[in-house]
Length: 216
Image (cartoon, rainbow, N blue to C red):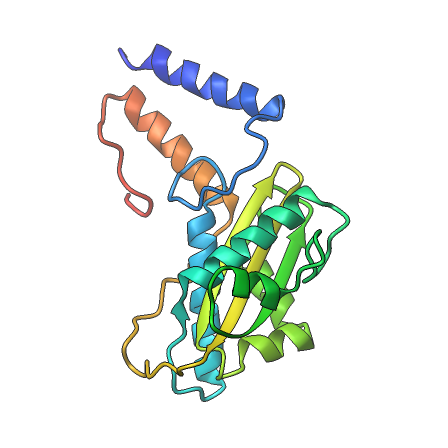
């Protein structure tokens, strides 16, 4: 019971911050457990692209590229903060290729963007949206797109996910080299709330450290 005042104060502070609009945006892409988990969502996109490419008989294993990820991050932040934007073109008139070049990527790129009017979007809803869009689908299953960078940003009323796909000047020979990331297909922000509730209940009973997600 010694932990109760501290935990309740922390939860009250978190709730107050949410109601007052602070923090304003979430996009740290870490594995936190109370805010939208951007890293899991991003990894889910990569895993689903991996699966879709193999279903399309691609023989390569798509890889995360830091330059493409940086270009995706730039555009995700731009779209989050400029509500007039709804596609590939940035507020400065830049194209996906312009941003990839600026990030130091050598090769041809394509991009998919999702904008959702809520604090989070589930991996299933996101991939279904792109799967059912002919242009986005064609980009995802293009076997020449062997590299990818994904970034997501959130506000209370807006989520932006950007994936940038690359064709390196020197093609990768990656068949059988990569283990696909866990897509966590049923993930959404409710997972974080559930884990937070479990953590709070165990702390009040003096059980520390709390179990990880998925523990009984």
